Amino acid sequence: MTSLPSLPTPKKLGLVIDLDVCVGCHACVISCKEWNTGGYGAALSDQDPYGADVSGTFLNRIHSFEVLPEGAEKIGETGDARIVHFPKSCLHCEDAPCVTVCPTGASYKRSDDGIVLVDEDMCIGCGLCAWACPYGAREMDLAAGVMKKCTLCVDRIYNETIAEIDRVPSCVRTCPANARHYGDLADPQSHVSKMVAARDGFDLMPEQGTKPVNKYLPPRARTALAESAIPLAENSAGASGFFAWLDGMLERI
Amino acid sequence: MHPALSIIVFTTLSGMGYGLAALLGLGLFDPAALATKIGYVLALALIAGGLVSSTLHLGNPQRAWRALSQWRTSWLSREGVLAILAFIPLTICAYAAIFHDRHLILPGLAAAGLGLVTVYCTAMIYGSLKTVQLWSQRLTPVTYLLFALASGATLGTLLAVSGAAQPWLIAFLAVSFTVAAWLAKRRWRNDGKALAPLSTPETATGLGSIGRVRLFERPHINDNYLTREMGFQVARKHADKLFGIAILLGGLIPAALVVVAALAAGAMGPGLTAFLAAFLAVLSHYAGVFVERWLFFAEARHAVMNYYGR
Ligand code: SF4
Ligand code: SF4
Image (cartoon, rainbow over all chains, first blue to last red; front, side, top):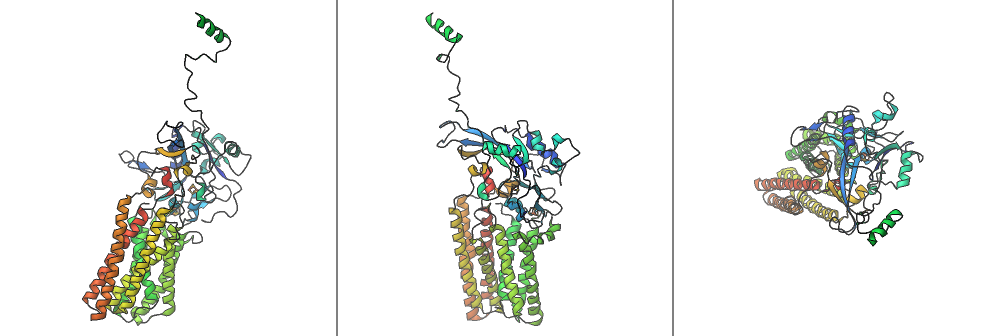
């Protein structure tokens, strides 16, 4: 059914991604592809995998952005430009436009935990849901002809046959920098909700009206490069104790 | 957006078919005339051809019937349901005209109405996508409906000069709808280009509070499904030229030819001159609308491209 749940879902399972911490290593991209190519639904195919024009289906991709401070035309002109690595996968939106446009009922949002899924046996591969998603979170698998998207590793998080520590999305389990967090964003006491509250977590493209469940944490303010430069050797103004004495003695020689 | 041939062919052909069906259903043609009978067959063929073409871009066309189920929320599903519903009265009318030389008023009105609502649903598939600002304008369905009627009336003129109806009446409709369609389209295009972008790289990444955001490295070196499907770009200067060509082929030339055809038919009765003029009008009109529809996709920018620096 492509009608969205009429009431807010009791649980809002999703991810919180810390843009201050992500180092852009793409480990989550690989672990996502590896888990999901053998898990839920059709495999994530590659086209021309060993050729020059290789491409394939991914449910999670990392973009890297350069942020130029206001007023700067070139890097280094005003303040410091910074690079922000930016992981992006389905945000399991509350008002998911990808679900309501689906003509077949293949796309749906679960009314208990809010996960947005595709029933691949019903999907005709029309691609309309990918057009409706502003985030580029849905990719058509060209081999299977069905729409693929992040399942929040629904086949891990409830899976009692794997160790409890593994019952989180594959990307979260893999991230070596701990930039990805998984939890229930409907529960204000969950560690993810607390993180969002403490760090001013935000929505992507709020103007699209999709009400994403996943949140992003902004990069922390940084000391400008010039201010954190190592003091010059000539400057001993801040010396104290033994070094102040040594400084004075050497001065006198 | 990527201008897929199958979708362009589908929307233009079925638009022409529904436009013609609307005129046939309103009873503007003489059901006893051979050209009217051919007209019914043409309308049905155009609609069916368009629908078949629309399934060509599906990943799993064998399950296409499932697309009829979600009419409560999905414009694509509504379009499918209405397309099938519209077939019923249109086929009944075609049967009555072809085998009994009769026009049925109620099924005729139903065929005209359901056909136009189908065109509206097609337009709303695009018009309801907030992600593509150019498309989500209110005028989108208006342009689709006017182009369907203009196409149908231009094709109708060909039938009319072949003895199916009063040539000047259908020619008048063809010219009126064509002029209205291009006026609406021009307004739609100018308005759409003047819109301030709803989403920007700053809102897409949420990093606008730190500064201006620019793509540094894309996820992979090569294109992916998203960039192929939604990253199509056409140079502005070419787009403007193509839009001019579309107006010429789809507006000015067919309107002039339709008038020539009506005059020739009025002066000499149905004959080769009138037929040829109307035939060329149809060809030129279709070529123009084809370019218009290509641009409809090619010029549309999708919000996801904020993540791809396009
Ligand atoms: S991120 Fe895209 S695919 Fe995921 S729920 Fe939102 S609109 Fe749908
Ligand atoms: S591609 Fe599949 S899931 Fe997406 S809208 Fe079409 S039928 Fe629904």
